Image (cartoon, rainbow, N blue to C red; front, side, top):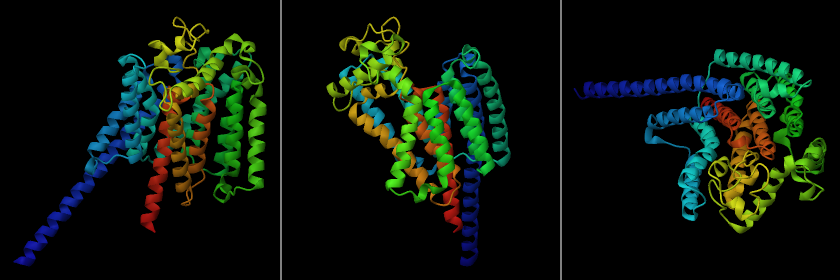
Length: 432
């Protein structure tokens, strides 16, 4: 009788475990399907057609849908588990929101608006990294083919635009959007491919199309991209020696050489502020003033919506008048079109502490990518995160890419690559 009862209990436990496993599978399948749809939608409408459609709020809609999917995933996870690093980021942003309200950095509406904009890229990364979406080979094939079709369209636009640069404006909205579409499509192709030598060659060919944008920043990024693809297999064996430092110095020198003319124009390198052309004066003044704000608002900065952010323009911040730059073209109350034209000055809102935290985030991503890559994953699982980090570090010099619609999609892709790496390492460990 006792034995029969034990069998019944054992059978019940097995049935319950099977039910739990089925629910987990169903939840993951739902996440996989819905995230794939959202990813494709964000790629097409939130990136490729963003400038063509002219609907600025589409990236916020995509971010909101991603947040809903994240909340669903958390509630369906036992114990409502959330990544510790993400919890840390949330805590930091809440602190800065409270700090901004305390020092009255701007109106409450402006602070909330800037909070959402600044938090958006971190949400994109950590949400995808947490959800660990898994795609089938056929789904990747569709995206791979789609990225090739879009690249061919960008190639045609880029070639025609060499005769008249206004072609960029009339087709994709801005030359910066063109470069971002090329970059994202190239990285997406590499992610969806097998990572063979042929795939890497096609990736570099696709990426080279961005050179048609004529952007100095892209020249530098392409050099980094080519070096990363060619030397990726040697990454794990790198040592800090004379040869490594020499190669790094040559690479940096090459990037500076191709970007020198723009550095002179953008930041007045080698000349006084007075001699900087009017069209580039706003960016130079933002950088100059940012250093003053870092000193005056130690260590947490001037707060949300106070300086060099979109919300500090729409809800015009008193900081610009305080530092006497309100009359600069593109920074005035009536014309604030250049206020959010670059990202690094915006870090003055978060002070020295914010700069350290910003760099720590990318070190966190780099560390994860390298750790996973050393577990015998394919080169692409390290190359893509590495290139995305370099892309943001370079682009943010003279563009607010990190907090833009372009940044949203690329951060989603970054989370996707690292989550796949994490899953592959886990499967490999279980198999071993």
